[in-house]
Image 1 (cartoon, rainbow, N blue to C red):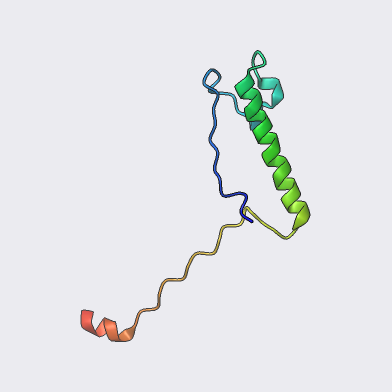
Image 2 (cartoon, rainbow, N blue to C red):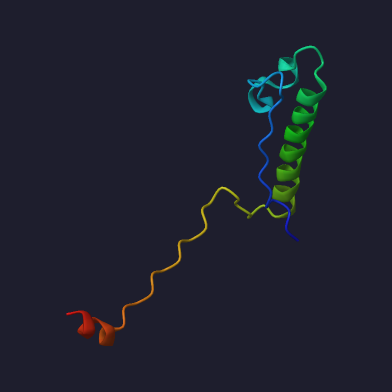
Length: 82
């Protein structure tokens, strides 16, 4: 099952500086519907991460995937270059 493959970058057209991670629900100006939706999305993402960690406590989504090893150089090919 693939869940967290989507990157979401959303901003309210009227309140471009609103950030639900920093401002929370108290930062919503005038009960703006789009800012409220952004806050709902933010809270849902936090809840999803909590559930994933509860299901598999050893899962570490902050760890970088290992870098692929460079292919080993075939010594026969090096003789052609030198």
